[in-house]
Length: 155
Image (cartoon, rainbow, N blue to C red):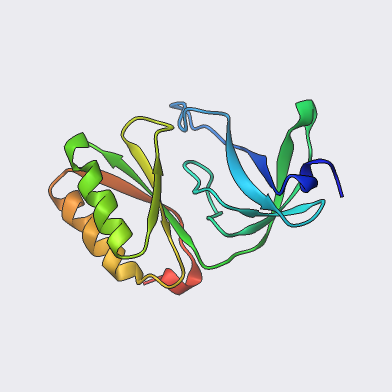
């Protein structure tokens, strides 16, 4: 096993494609992962910008330049879904985080001001999450994007 595998956790670099307006604002995103072998890891952080993967998914990686590990391919999905929420009213962030946690979701924020990523685990009813999201959407408190929706969450 490689030296990185002895640590137990690693960072995997995912390249991002920016649109003509420069979104997302980065050329790559780094996700934390639990090392399973010399070439396979399980994602433990919630993606902000990477499309098509979610927390818990298994991905392959390879050594890149400057001691980094680069994403190769998605190997197995684990039933998690990922949403991104952009807040227009910052005063509502804590309330939504609390509500999402109550239904079984976890969130990450801080990388981009007013942006939060949401992990919806396999056992959480997607409709209950969307009820919370749509309430703020109709009040123009935030907008959202579905980044990766698991088969079990498709409505």
